[in-house]
Length: 299
Ligand code: SF4
Image 1 (cartoon, protein in one colour):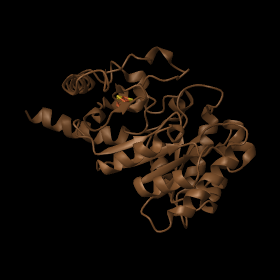
Image 2: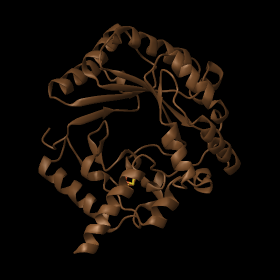
Image 3: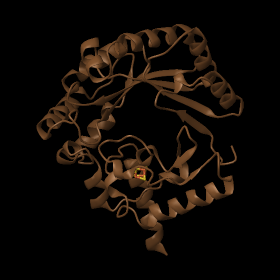
Image 4: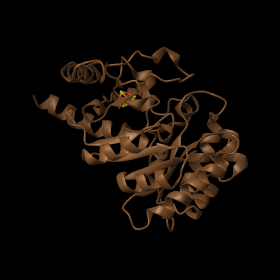
């Protein structure tokens, strides 16, 4: 609260496995935060569902396939059944509450030909929304240029309203068709690297957003967070800007301001490789960069 935060998203790892998750959710709600949860759906029961309904604004389940064979191949054996059961339990307790229940699907080479079937599955699960994301980084899951082109063609056909579910297909199609994502960059795991570099876009995200690890370490965003990204271990700890448990709030705020200053003055030169994987904020950053450039030119 002292940092002026008004919205918290609990992600993972798996946040619902935390032994104090019930207390964490109710305390966050009592303090007045808007709360979102990102989960793999591996755990859900009556107590947890009631707590989520009472305290959260939204919850997003990670779905990787339309059936057990596809989803479990990407995740782990038995995970699809658990996911579907968790969604059903939550929907049962959701009733007429304002909680939004949704799914998130990362497009990768094991599921890219089944995206329409994943939409149908999510409609049958009665979730409110389904967001598709593109796979970042390199690995066996990454699509080739020709496979990404197939996704681009599918998006063109799939742009429409679906009864009973909100999707981000229109946005994704815009990203593909306006070259914000280009096929070569997508296949190299850094979908927006060219977009950021060619347009000299700066990052303004750290004014509005930061990420805290389970240990209290603060990062400007989840893309630059200490994590096990096997695709680029060099970034581990490189962008840590403080610790919310062991350091004073004033020190942490000072470090956040420094990062923000750096990210405007040095961006994208300093951290462009990692930022090339960051698809979440590219339109926001482009818009604010345009405003920023106009203000600077006016002075
Ligand atoms: S553009 Fe870079 S610094 Fe900004 S949010 Fe994305 S990864 Fe983080």
